[in-house]
Image (cartoon, rainbow, N blue to C red; front, top):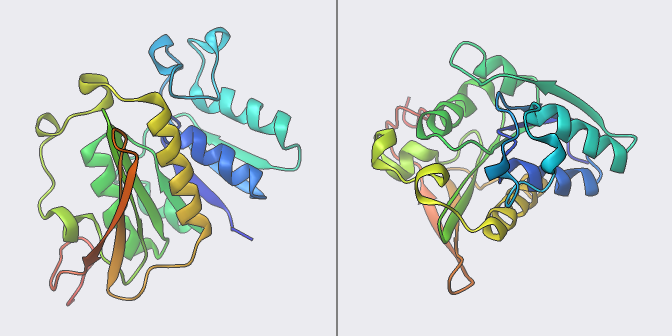
Length: 219
């Protein structure tokens, strides 16, 4: 049984991940997001409807999940996670899922894995492509994969480039599956890449980089 799980970002990835985990029997979820529901969210964030526009995402998500799963315990944070609280947030849970749409947030969460000891399932989706990777303590991290974090304006986001709504659902469900699955082998992680045009899935092995400033390899 999966222990207490925190989902940071209740958007196109976090919503389907939360639904999948609840259906799989999760007992405790913490939902973290500082945003309100917007009309532009509705095509890819299935926990929300037109009547929810203007309400905090985590409040609506908690209501919908509780209705479908009365035994599920749901805690909510109406805020964005920053450096001051990221370690304590992750360390209070058995696993974390990254549903954010920000480069800085993704690297912040990835870097916190080694300090908190809490595995993270990172994910991202934009336009026709998406990817997910489980990052365990002792495994490879986002800095092992990408090196230095790119600037926000160098990376396309859903807001700027758009996204296929159904593909976000696929990636969120994949993140939930990785959360429920076994940990990554020591020294590496597996990157799962999804091409929404061809409907092809492929995996790449990411090896831990000696001296990586994110996961502390070689420290």
